Image (cartoon, rainbow, N blue to C red; front, side, top):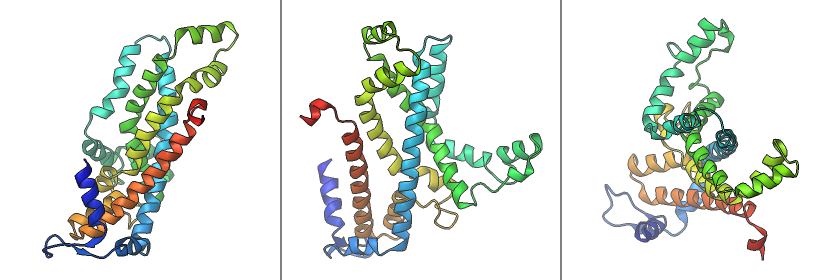
Length: 271
């Protein structure tokens, strides 16, 4: 684990085209200066932050909501738990192709449903050819494929809460929203840290959705930083510059993970 991490850090300080150059040439921090002067890099990092924050917020809130529903004693609970986990089993590239068909402007299911079934042709549009709706589309696919896994993780945390605590809260008159916000959610602090860390890493390393569905378009509206790193490394063979951008992405992820840990700290941690 350490060797590729350290070696890619060294590569980020060099200029190296692995097709034409025999050995890397040390250039210091030039690749990092080049990155922050590159409009395409700035666009990709902004897109990545928009996607990552949107994915984190929707997936965490939605996953927690599903987990709270599944935590109740309802009929067919086992069936529902299995059903919401199914999308995580579907290969992400296949899920992207399915949604690509759904969102096709001419023969896609969504435009057919809006225009022909609901008779609302004014709401039909080329979903993946417009910047804002294209970003929304890839966020939807990412949430659809991951929200079941997040719900299962939250559900594991809910099942770890002591029954005595929940029963005592109910005896004290805490029920419904009061029990959820004052008893259950505070006891999920560690689950929020673990699930939040996973969601941040998963969101900011987005690659498959824009690569398969939009190829970073229209223009650069959905170009993700991870995708830009891949194209720089394996299309233009500039390994030094790609490594520098990858390290910047790693630092961005570390910042958000650090914020997540800070919010999830307990009083004992503060001491």
